[in-house]
Length: 443
Image 1 (tube, one colour):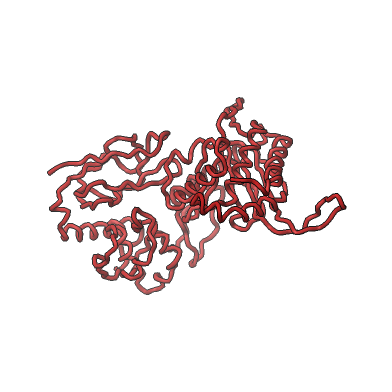
Image 2 (cartoon, one colour):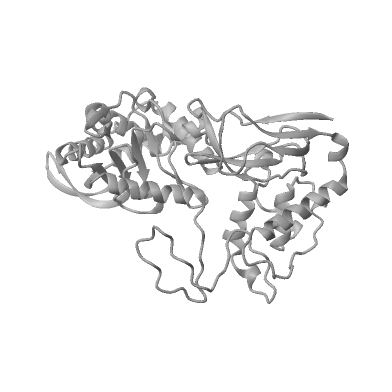
């Protein structure tokens, strides 16, 4: 029998290590090609490590929560094709995973089983043993499972796809029975939970119909980062209203030809990024970080764009050297990063080394916001929804009222190093670039 050494894969130029957050497969488990063996995390990006071979996992070389260097051997897989082909072995895998899921959920030792016996093998679509186990515990029929869209390779249904579907589409309907199924992503509780050690105030009471949801790893990181930012920087926010009518009319005019020529849809985001990059070149002291009593002026202009994930969490992929890209290049970068963020395919180094952040609160219908600075940066710009409004225009024949496309820009900045004059001038300059958009601009 041959033995295959599974290495921690390279995840980006600047990423040298990762933390093992969960072993999906345990020693003795049979593994199919492309089955997820473990889940790893670097900063904000969580990734699955699939198996490049089929066989049996015989050894795990690192424990959960341990930090591993890129290129290190993390597991040993015994490649015995005869054993992999055994249907009995595959059934044993499913039984082991089901038992592991039940054992790892507190308070479910006494729950009766409500899983429906479904032959998921009869489907033409591939499902991993873990996906089939969760589907069985949630009483999901094969017909329903086949309708769930997958984000994995070749449309493969991943664990996260299934859990998101259960949480979003099925809700609590499946749990309204006398013998509830084992919950997979959340647990209904009635007793009062102990307050966290660092909680500023204890919860007074928890009602019988209340629900406690445990923060996932990414939400914990976001919470810590936001609290740290408010504790580190005295936040000030300046607002500007901009008339972006020419910009809106220009995009409406060029978007069909642009998509036909570049095979990309042009949104307002790359236009905002271009304006921000130009304004940073005009006011380079916005593009700094603070190190004690030192101000570090950044050479590169790397603009992060906050993106909401299907899970509800937030991630900030970074457009590097944004000032060196034309509008076509910015559009391609924005679309690529946004698309891969939504399916959790970003590389860890694609969320690092940002020097300024842009967040589009207008995508949720909000007209303005007061964003929290993405440390160690010193400023973040929120762009609001574009609304048609009556506005006063100055013409050579006098003032007139016209319907214009208007939007608010709000800049939060670190008042330790950015004063009101600099912060206000910067956000005004961004608005000027958007207002003075050339409606006849060629791409």
